[in-house]
Image: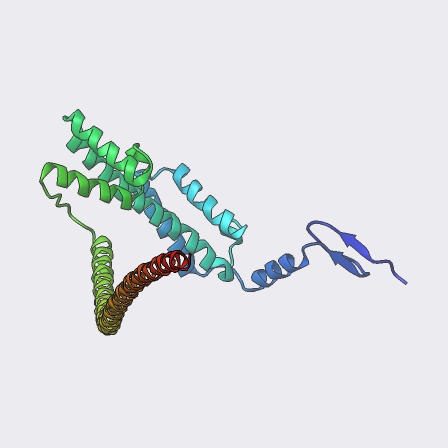
Length: 297
């Protein structure tokens, strides 16, 4: 029975036996790409055109720039130009196109940066105001660190400060991007307007509902005040009646007290008269007794 062989790294020819390969999936994919065949003439020509365009964008057609471009292809595919296959062509093309887009963006950004620096070169105060705006809006006062979109915002602010409008020729791609941006802005504005209308409608409905609730509350308060007023009137009438009854009772009590006092006076007078009469009778009786005793003697 043969022992299995463990191989870490590239594999050449194995005579016999089982083989365990670390990273086997990657090697299997590479093997499949190898089986796809080399580049066809049109693909090879396309890659050379893209490399030439990169050299032109960098302003140098030297061999060193070409080697740098081919290094991008090597990093993306892991293969040199001679080893590229048809299956790896999309990756190589995408790497070069990405570099071209980056270089175009850098050139546009550089033109915009030079324009801003030129317009502020003779006015230190204006440059400081532009730098302050960049610091507030973009987080950096170093214009060279800003993106193309941020520099566009700085240029627009500069136009506002100076009261001028910057007109620069646009490439077809920039014009298309600007048109798409304007379309998106219009659509965004339309969405904002629609949202504002919906919010206004909701606000009006809320205001109407609130007015209705307030009206019902006012009606309830008025009814409550009416009932309260009626109750207060009835309470006040009851209090007035009780006060009148109290006054009448006071008068009756005073009348009764007056009558009782008069009866006491009359009784005292009658008693006094009776006592006087009794004393007179007693005196006369005593005097009569004296007379009778004298006559007997």
